[in-house]
Length: 238
Image 1 (cartoon, rainbow, N blue to C red):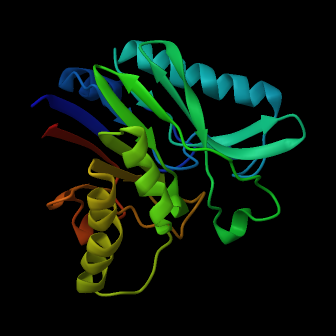
Image 2 (image 1 turned 60 degrees about the vertical axis):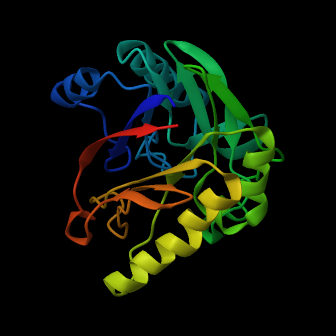
């Protein structure tokens, strides 16, 4: 068994890590730091806008954080310009070096016609562990988790853009079981979901970050914490 330390950055989209938050992350000495879907956006450009200059700046932020934290940073997601296409992409850096990227395959309705879906699943290796990335609506396809299992992922990071909905706590927890615990069972892996917090920029989000294993939910934010910025420090055995 191997201990793995993970920081789930449950934060508003388009914000920056401040000095105190960075110090808190470094003090935990994490292997992995994961951000929400569409965290690395320029709010003036919006979730579905990008320029080459801004794209470079956001990638530099992720790279520098991975070096500063001496960790692997799963860069939530950002709009990625690729020729004339725009993708919703998670870039992964480890200790200042690029490990690659994953482009979201299954789009949210608001992305259709704006975002081009990716065409492949990917896994990466760092700290002696193989891990994969899925993005938000990817979790609704069994194929996503089965492919992570086939590729050998031990951890699956899931940057997520979670819309607020009126439902009971029991309904929330049932969905956690039906989607994330079930997904962990299909993949035979640890599942780490990281959500963005509502803000003036996006006031319709609910931050329901969690960690699940094939045996059940290991951690989730409490219902009263769904609007709270949190740096969630979690240690698991793989």
